[in-house]
Amino acid sequence: MKNTPFSFFLFVWISFVSFRVEIKAQSSIWVQNNAVWHYDFDYLNGSFGFIKTEHVGDTMLYGHQSKVFSSTRYRFFTDQNQIVHLSTITPLADQYTWNNDHQVYYLVDQQYELLYDFTKNPGENYPIVTYEDPVDFCNPISSTSVISTGSMQIGNESYPTMELQSSLSNLTQLNGSVNARYGNHNTTYSARAWLFPMKGGYFPGVGAPVSSCDTTLLFEWTYLRFRCFQDDSLTVNPNNVDCEYYINHVGMPELNENGYLLYPNPAADFITLVSPFEQNDVQIFTISGSLVYSGKSTAKIQELDLNLPKGTYILKVSSENQLRYTEKLVIQ
Image 1 (cartoon, one colour):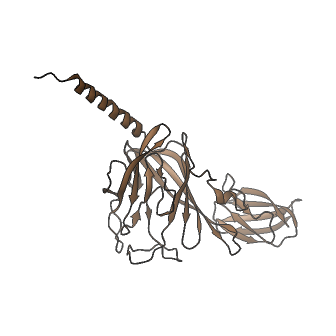
Image 2 (cartoon, one colour):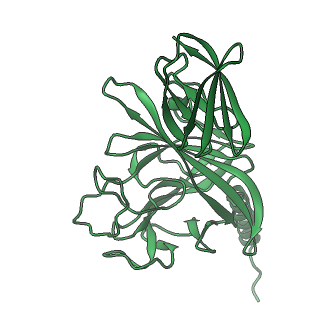
Image 3 (cartoon, one colour):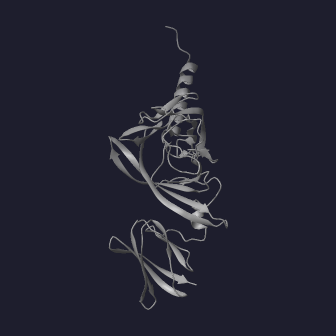
């Protein structure tokens, strides 16, 4: 046997070390604890707002150590005087993920499906829902296509990236630019470009989910864009913006730690109460303790008409037979 040149062994060793370094740099994918995302959204019907998604814990689920995510959609609208108002606060279904070194999975109908697969090459696709109930003109398997791949430097590590695009014939779609560290980072409005796949379209001006993927129909897609992200070791805010701008800057105080909000305050002849409960008992007292108003709210966001003299009052809100919220109210 001929002697193998030393340079060959050196080349193999350097290649192996380089491979190990690259795998190490790209192996620690996905989010760490206390992750929070904000995505802006916009509808053609004039409403807009943001979706806030938070990592709220970990659990063992279907044989996998899984992260639990809770999402809330804050929707606003602009009135004829160009004043921004909070319209709805809607909790979305919790999401669950687990990941290995190259893929992130999410839970769909009691089984895990691929969310992001960074082993794919441009031109390949992968299923994001392996079976869906029959819907007119829709594929029974929804998938997303990898348009391009690359990498991005985040801190001292390099993470793989992909550009994803779903066919309009898929009921569930996943679109946009994603990276292996925190998912979708698409900073321009794109249809259904959220952290997780989105299902269903909307008829313009109606807002009800449609039961068809007929591409000849005009749908009102949900357009989203990445706003900011942070977890225990990373903060990403491309435009250095307030992540919850409309909550913090439309003349309303923030929701308190228990999820309540009262506005306007000072008020005139009405107030709007935001509560995490559908049913609330509302009482208003004078400073001396006299009851001057008693009513009920039957929605999480409800306007209450008042007919009170100018002055300072104490508003109390109870739900499920417990006092939940107390606030000073000024009528002027």
